[in-house]
Length: 469
Ligand code: FHN
Image 1 (cartoon, protein in one colour):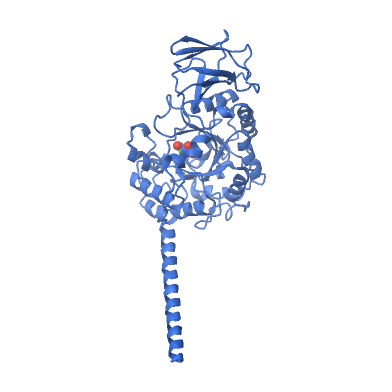
Image 2: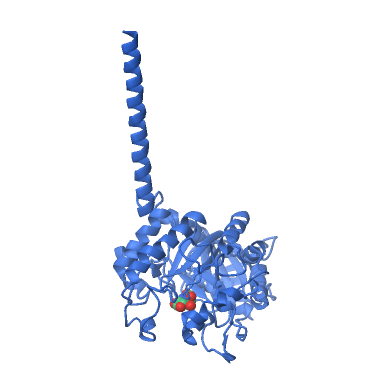
């Protein structure tokens, strides 16, 4: 009897352990399948919650860095016109001639902490770096290609890993730019040049490149370097890429990191963001990306970010000295914030790994302005006022920030369109918050008496504390 019981118990326990093993195997396989397909993860945040850090940030650094920094705009002794990161295309360089640039890409002066520190000191809250630009070279150790920083260059340091650590340490959100178009991959390169880049011809193997190469690479980037702030796609205008593929990619990325933010270039959403209905906007990404421009009245009802160069190139070009002034850059930041957008300002590091001095100087100047005035940028919303003759306005509940670009010589700052009662007015640069006198001139116009000297010749911020909305 006892023997029977023991046998029964043994049998039961074998069954139980078999069942448990089967359950574990089934669960693991489901997880594995889910992991492979990138399904099963749901968003936990609403769009407003997901976008909050990004909307509050208002200012980020764009980094275009890759093999194109080696020729830096010159090919075979000639200056190649146009943007530096397009040199492969502009100088019509065959893959076999471009590839060996990797052996010369050895950015030994790169220091991730310094790099991130430069952005942070400028008041930037996030960095968007080219994990892979159109030339196809990868700045991280990718499992699916040797055309990357670890396997093809003498540098053999994973740039994205180092940046990810430095960003975490300094509280900066790391984001990746990723080109859908790829001039290097055999299934995706430009076989019908020049029509290919004009969106006229398709590449027959592009779908294979997407499934077997681009998606696995994105999985590496999102799972090994994340959590990321933004996945910033580009190169979507080619004929190979369609809106349904964009939807699929959006869902793929979102399933890997549910609360990630994705730009509109994931699909064909770049053109006419304003004209799209809500559903289309959702699939065309989370925010619009006006390039090298600031929309005159913003993009009402849509999140957006103006990306802009400091000179005339994204990737480093040794001969491009057409730098924007500190004044233009500081005023652009205020202009964009006053229209409800973010400013993504570019740097193009050299092949040695340094951000050009001219960029560092400008970022330092913006940083000095931000140290005094960042309250008028972070977490603000678009101006509720109409066009202002002397500058721009940003807003927070109970506060208006008047960005005065042109200091009125009669020392009267007129604010048309304001019906609210003003409780207090002061200069943001004034630690003592000394009251400036305010007089109501019309039902919807007040005048602030300002001091003779503007504390900042480029943009002095006057704060109005107001009653009601
Ligand atoms: O072709 C690129 C260009 O090189 C650069 O990366 C910019 C940045 O927004 N985007 C593309 C053009 O729209």
